[in-house]
Amino acid sequence: MRIDNREILLEVCCGSAEDVLEAFRAGADRVELNSDLFHGGLTPTVGSLRVVKAETSLPVMTMIRPREGGFCYTETEFRVCLEDARLLLKNGSDGLVFGFLTPDGHIDAERTRVLAAIAQEAGKESVFHRAIDVVPDWKEAIDMLSEAGITRILTSGQEADVSDATDIIREMIQYASGRIQILPGAGITPRNIKRIAAETGAGQLHIAVHRTMTDSSTFNNRSIFYGGCLYPPEDQFRLIDREAIRRIAQDR
Image 1 (cartoon, one colour):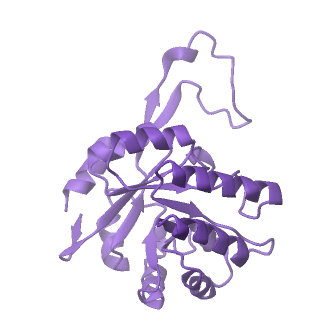
Image 2 (tube, helix red, strand yellow; image 1 turned 180 degrees about the horizontal axis):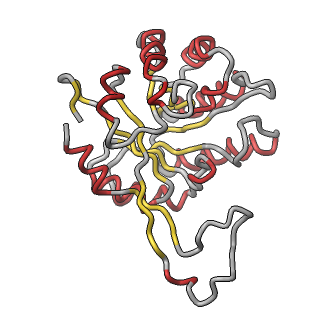
């Protein structure tokens, strides 16, 4: 995508290996690989990473998040994060995406530095994800993350939808002043992507555009449900919308 003679890097948020393949075929520049996007994205399997690295040339950033529901983890959960980080890097991950907070919602500097160092030692990137959107002082957070050697921050500008925070994103980019990359994401669609790029001045954007697919294997007994109390349809799943991403990627 090209805005005001600027090339905009397009990162696609993926919840499966199939998502990554669709994003690759559509012309994405980079992907973030997760599992369970319904809960905001959790750590993907090593198997999914190995498949996409074997079948695509895309840079693949991998989420390190052991569970849903916040970003303040137990010691056991943090040990899982460390093991997952090392395994994913060993199997081809191009960088780690993570966020660690203290119980009062500030960045956990110690744990952040540990994960950043693991990525740096492997010669890979590190991304502090949208946990920054709930910290009390984003300027203080940018200073700390920059000092820790984090490559990039994924943020919605501390709003639910980045469309409502383009002024904050622009301010973040100016405040970061090249010390650390700012990657806007959350609520970016094919309809608003050019406006967000123009208003923020960002050189890269994070987007998730999915379509609903049907899996008929559960049709024989519709009274059976395998999930929690929200009861989403058992015969549907989400997949990256290749054509929507292609239209964005080709408009560059």
